[in-house]
Length: 499
Ligand SMILES: Cc1cc2nc3c(=O)[nH]c(=O)nc-3n(C[C@H](O)[C@H](O)[C@H](O)COP(=O)(O)OP(=O)(O)OC[C@H]3O[C@@H](n4cnc5c(N)ncnc54)[C@H](O)[C@@H]3O)c2cc1C
Image (cartoon, rainbow, N blue to C red):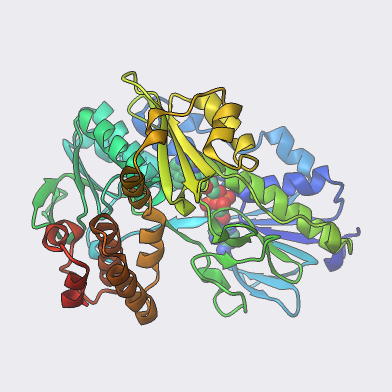
């Protein structure tokens, strides 16, 4: 292909997904011009160490690993435009406009703009520390060095890692989340409870099922007071905002793309003719499990390659050779001296089985959907998790998966029907979050109908939390908190009082 617009590919975002995409284009023989826009003035570093080695001080900031060596960068022969954010796309003309007003035409466009750390509205005026890039990590590290009490909002992967780093510095740490347990929305309650035990046994004060209602900053950086929906209050010198990250799509407003918590793509990661998206910014249609957006290192790397490959095939008129993007996702998190690993799609599971668990902290949970393994997660079981990545797409039931792992069926596999039912209900976290994310009246009605049909107190607890979260997110009843209401609801009809 030539240097004309038709032979030019524009990549927006030079994070992991963008860089893996350009590497894939070159390795597959694309010889045309690749223009890479990156809003930051330097190439971003690899992000995982930012909440681990860099934050804990184990590595100096200058040791933050890059995504490419200088030689690799040169070999890619890019037109790299650092410090240049793209502001809009003209789909019809095949052009992007950057923040200097300069227009650049393209034959193919890759959207790889990642995500921005969420800052809850309650903190609009109060200073909090997000953690997304190297600057954030350096600032937080320095603030922790001056602090004695830290409050972390959000007990997901980042919140738990920051809690671990802060405990290493011997700080008093409070970890707060609206979910019933840490990482419950991604890994379910069974795993969440075990993570809660780990967190608390390392001296962290954990407050779950509660959100921050109000923050008051003291004068001259003398800390802040936080009031929670549970009625508790606490003091902190540093507040860390680890409440997730939103897809960086603002620059696409008005450009004609469908955006719904990510750039909406089809199964090939295609967002429009000649336009593909990858990494944290992309919401694509998984052929089996439906619409999803993943914010993990391995997804950014794999989808970067997949999207670039499909784009290049389309540009060559070989659309029929494109392949749907159907990964077996993988992520890890390091905290309190342990590595948590997860593979597959735990959020779609309806049952969780602990197939291995011992007093040394070894744990392997398998997630099932209608009896079929869809995910596995655990601590100190790296080899089994690696094998699960290959086995999960093929295993039709738990027994087949365990045979592949050379493991026996656990005694829990012989549980009574009632016990199984309980476990199943505990694993309905995916439903909880799906419900909470659907804020329309129609879904509210559906939740209530399902509750009234269900008549099971365990299921009711989960559904009730879902309904409460949906209400909270919608902002129509900010006083509701799962911890406050959970004990009061004993019968499905009780929901009617709160609807
Ligand atoms: C602190 C931290 C720790 C993590 N630890 C783990 C871990 O342990 N395990 C794991 O599996 N995952 C981890 N992750 C997640 C993983 O690192 C991310 O999923 C991955 O980096 C996403 O890559 P990306 O390229 O999609 O997005 P990003 O890395 O966000 O890159 C997007 C780039 O686009 C640029 N950009 C945005 N808008 C524009 C624009 N309009 N014009 C031009 N450029 C633009 C941004 O400046 C940015 O550099 C961690 C993430 C963070 C933040």
